[in-house]
Length: 102
Image (cartoon, rainbow, N blue to C red):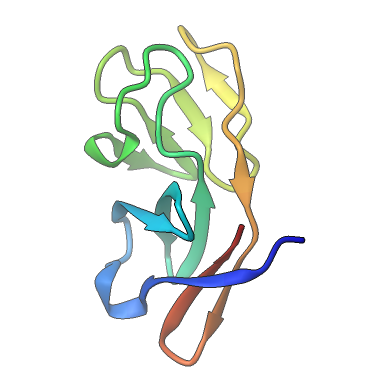
């Protein structure tokens, strides 16, 4: 059964930032889109590049290696060369803690 676990503090993630963290033994990427927090699997599905080394453009994360892109909210692949979606995780804010359901 999935449970929410603390992933970071809201102050750890400025708007437009991406960080990778371990949450209950699972590595996830956390994103701040204008004060809304999202979590996905941490690696590009093309060649496993760390998405926290990429950048956010609108609602998409762009891989630092070959510029594959993914919708941060849905995990959907939006640009090649990746053709497999990211896993997304439910996120909530409790006080100043960002919690991810794993």
